[in-house]
Length: 311
Length: 318
Image (cartoon, rainbow over all chains, first blue to last red; front, side):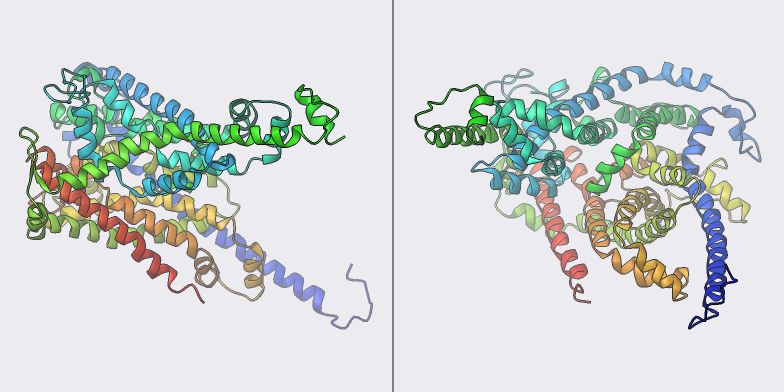
């Protein structure tokens, strides 16, 4: 290769380039190593609180009183979990959260996708108005409307001993209705679905129409199967929001049998006060399902979160 | 062929004598069906949001002009609630805390998120693992996160933060029970929890930055820092704006963290707007006043969205 004696205009160029390439590559390697070291340190710091939670949940509580406290527990004490489960009905809490989160996921997939499809693919007169309304709704924080929503739920006519005028009883308070209905459709999910549907080919719809497929059939059988990853994304994001929801279940449930896990943890805190090994066992139970779900469906979560920017 | 194929496929028999007649009619019926189904499919979600978001806003505005304690019927009180808010030091202190949390926490977590995203944007072994570890705080319920930090901040000798500080020779600090330290302790948690999502958005945006820009800079001998500030930061301006606005909005919705960590204390040193509204409505039962506070919160968010658009978008011409 270097034996090429052609009288080139810049005879030294190849070797000079190679040398520079070489040093570039070396520089890249050292900088990669530096970056790697930094990332390891940073991600360990970021994950440390979770590690501490897990460690504390299996620690023998007497270790906490030792001076100095051993950072790593001497032996694994899973009894903490059974004790926590005995002190508060975490299984019921988890079941309730599962129902709430699943309902939120299913309802959003059905109703938000229908609306998103209509906005993306069907021309009807009110479409621009509906789209503008949904975008406006995304901007409105739940905390700004939570009191009126609470009042509406409490004064739901003919429920919970209420009269037709919505007075006299407790309405939907402490019922599944209150937990599920107000959050059944999220405007953000409508928006997300619209984005997914916009990228599907309209030619398919035209072709299906010519083949005599009904409009509803086109939506359910032709186009929606094309956005399966999008369906999963919305289902997962809705599930996450349902599982992690706190303020709303806190406000509308009073009985232990309807309590969801996040509210359960908060109330367990009063009960177990400084029994941190039990509190961390309970917290682990509340945190781990979402972490596992995220690890399995990371790709779909990421797709949705990148579009949302809002917790 | 193009005119017969559709009718053959649909199975509808068109009279051969008038080949042009069925087409407009069929087309018209398709348009009608499209309109009808558009409305039908959009209706449930639209009605739901009208009932559970639209109506509550109207109710909030109406009730903000009343005195209402849940037990007795609301009574019109004019602008009294707004006058009360105007002189309510605790409400504005809560707003101020939101502003401080945002002003300190958001820039720090945005910067760290950008640094992490830039580093994770190259082919590195185990980048998926790093990404997950940095993102975990976001996916975890804030209640659980707050419980963990409550334990980490524990003033006892087994509180992790004090153990770590003890290694460097600092005496145990009352992180959440000292009014001077509590807000800072809260901010640290918001930074830690906020990095993941911002990093994710930056990572997505980095995919759109032309690799050739970096290659050209490499040839010119630019170092990491130069490339970061001369290429990465300018190219990510839209993402930065997006993150800033969404972070500001979600900052004003901080509630769970405060509820668990500090309950707004000690001495109201960590009270935030949402927590103040919650107290006004569900502990003091001044529902009319709480609705007026909610309306103010709504206005703050609207103004914020517009302001940040001007600040970040104002330098678009370079």
